[in-house]
Length: 82
Image (cartoon, rainbow, N blue to C red; front, side, top):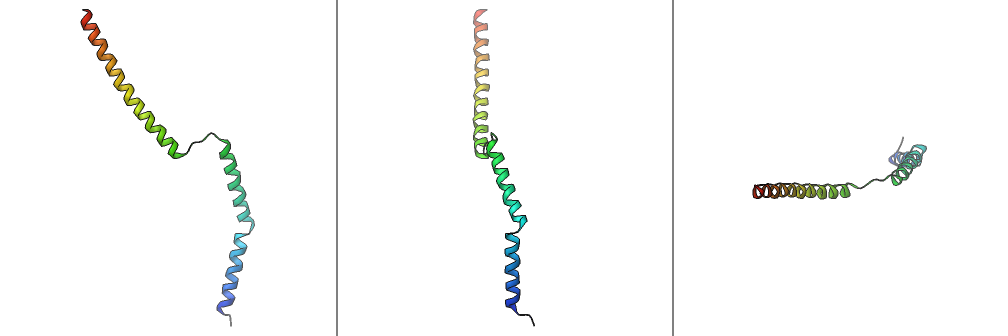
């Protein structure tokens, strides 16, 4: 009859084989290769992107306000010139 110890040993050996097998090595190598490739690219983190998007939104708001102010001043100048 088979006992629980046999199944535990078998399970441990299979897990060890799966973790140290060629598939695991390929996965490690692919991750390293991808990390190296991404390091060469000019990428930004999501946090950096979000910060820059907020800066751009504030800049657009200021630009819109300035355009409205310039239009108002030009209208005043044109009215005064008449």
